[in-house]
Length: 285
Image (cartoon, rainbow, N blue to C red):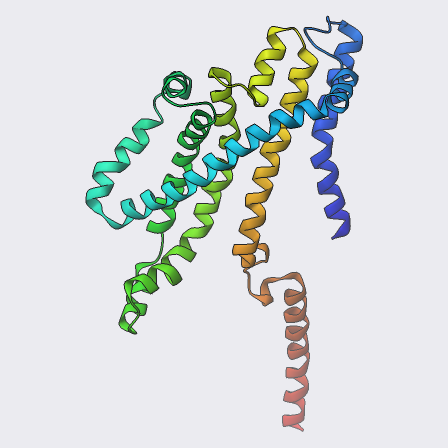
């Protein structure tokens, strides 16, 4: 088991290391200008020397992404509950939720930036991108609950709210967490898109300013920060899922289907097969 875990971790690290190696070889062989493609050493040095500046802008992006994600969770779950509980809401709201994603966010972000102040615009754009997967997976999860479980609980005297809290919502949590993991990554994208359109701080703003001034190594460092933030938010949601659904970390197969269980069943069967002729001979004797 430890060997498999080590192999999995090695495979996880191998891909980015391979990418950095290819990047280094391109820089050594092709020798592009520093303003076009900085070397990995230059980007690493910028990450260290400009860490205060990068952290200043990262705080804005992290805050906007978290606010947009939290707002998407609250509003998206409420809309998902309404759609799954009412056919009228399903027909009136769900098609517009889908249609809202047909409009490119780059076309909407400038208008939102005109309407709202800095910060609020970034949170709004992040919310618009995040809320769709929360609604869709929430509706699918709530609708996938076995209605027989609710009927049995109601027959035993449970209220509708009790059934929803103890039966419907727990059954929908796996699907809801799947949408929330996607939304965690989309939140960073939404915040950065809005920062490109109009902002006075943030990693997206820093990337735009750096590239316009041909400080490409700073832009690469900001992109590295964005990747780390997205991975961290994804991992945080996955951690919450493990806490809320601990049973999903373990196999749901019965014990007799595991390797140890199969071996035990096989040895028991062989023992019974050997015992049957002995018992027959005793009866004959």
